[in-house]
Image (cartoon, rainbow, N blue to C red; front, side):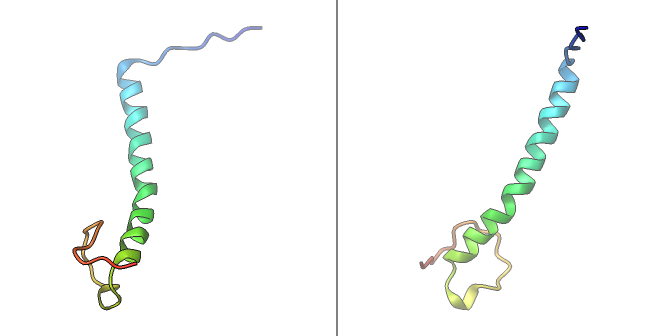
Length: 59
């Protein structure tokens, strides 16, 4: 028996892609924070700056 696949409406597609984008960004943010902290100098490791790439970065 074949089951027919129902096509999604435009709203359902928009909602599905919106949820996927939200969770993708939600998952990537911690990786960006770790990367940003790894570039900070030692005296600014615990700062609350939201800059992805710090002004004076070090390796």
